[in-house]
Amino acid sequence: MLHLSFHPLSSRFSFLPSKFPVTPSASHLPLFKPISLPPPHPLLLSSPCRRRLPPLPAADLSVFQSVTEASAVLAAIIVVHESGHFLAASLLRIRISKFAIGFGPPLARFFSSSGIEFSLRSFPLGGYVAFPDADDPEFPDSGVAPDDPDLLRNRPLPHRFLVVSAGVVANLAFAYLVLFSQCLSFGAAARQPLPGVLIPEVRPLSAAAVAGILPGDVILDAPSVYGLVDLIKSSPGKSIPLQISRKTLPNPFIVNVVPDTDSDGTGRIGVQLSPNFRVTRVRPANIFEAIRFSGVEFVALSATILEGLKETFLNFSQTAGKVAGPVAIIATGAEVARSSSDGLFQFAAVINLNLAVINLLPLPALDGGTLALLLVEAARGGQKLPRELEQRIMSSGVLVVLMLGLILIVRDTLNLDFVKEML
Image (cartoon, rainbow, N blue to C red; front, side):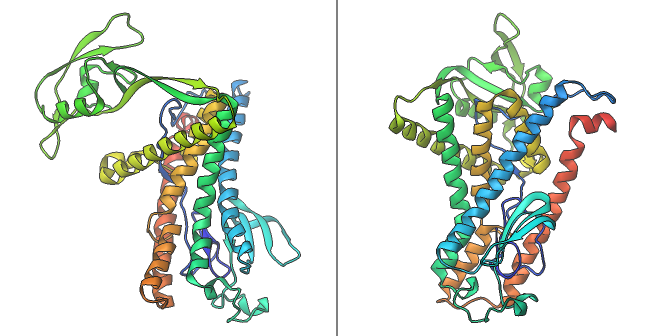
C-alpha cells in the first residue's frame, strides 16, 4: 500500500490507515478475497477440533504449529509487498519516512541513519511505507521544503507509477519464486485426466443434496464440465439420470436429479463442478526445466484465480459467502500446513497471486485506485486532480474496506470450530 504524507503506503493487509485523511497516492489492499486454490490442494475453511479445558489435547500442538506457519506466510507477503514499494522508492531516491509491519501503536521501532523509522506495530495484519508530504501536520518538523524534488508528490508520473505498482510486482515475483522452490523441493504437478466430472462441493438443501449427491462424488457419464452445465441449464424441472461413482462404494449407481429453476429460467442443481484428474509430482531434470515447469504452474494458477474472481463478481450473490477475511485465510493456511508442506507452498503462491490481482482493481483504497488516479492525471496532461477530491475518493474507499474487514473478522471468528463449541 502506498501513502503520501506520513500516512501508510498500503500493505495488502491493512484494514486501517495510520492516519486520516488519506492522501491521493494512498491505497489500501484488504486482506479479504475469494480463495481460488486449484487441486491438488483443496483448502478447507474449518477442521475438526475438540476443545477440552484443561488440559489441551496433544494434537493442539500441531494446530498451533500450523497456525504459526500460516501466519508466517502472511507476514512474509506483507514484508514482500512493502519491500517492493520501499525498494522502488529507494532506487529512485525518493524520500521515505516510515516502514511499518502492522498498524496501530508501535511495539518496537528504530531509526536508520537516514532517519527512516522501521517499526513493528500492535496489529500485525497490515503494513505500510510512508512518505513525507507538505499537507501532513508533522511535515514542518521534518526540515524538508515543500518543493523538494525528492518528495513523492513532486516526482514525475512515471516515478510515482513505478512506486505504486512495485508492491504488486514484488508479490508476483514472490509467487513465482515460491512455485520454483516447490518445483525443486517436491517436483512439478503433472495432471492425469480421469473419466467423469468431479463434484467438490454440494450446497445444502439444493436439488443435488436432495437427490443424495455428496461432495467427492464423480459423475461418470458427463462428457465435460461445460457439457454437463449445458445439460443442467437446459433441463429445469426435468429429471436427469446421472451415473455416480463414490469412493466408499464398490460400484457406480444412478441418481435422478431434478434441477431447480433459476431466476433466468435455466436449471441449477447446486453443485460445484471440476475436471476429474489425478495429480503426481515430476522432478525436473535440470534448473532450466524447473524454470519452465514453474512458469507453466504460475500461468495456470493465475488463469484459475482470474476465472475465480470473474465468477465472484458476476455471481456475487451466490459467492459472497466464500469471501474470506484474515481469520479464515489463516485457518485455511493452517489446514493446508497440517496436510502437507507441499500444500503450504501452493497456499503461499495462491494468496500472493490473489492479492496481487485484487490490488490492481481500479477501486479506491487499493493500489489500483491510486494507479487509476495517476492515469487520470496523465490524461489531463499532467494536471493533478483537486487535492480535496482525491482525498474524498480515497477516504471513502478506506471506510468501506474498514467496515467490510471488521465484518469478515467477526464472521470468520464465529465460524471457527472451537469458537462454535464455546458458544
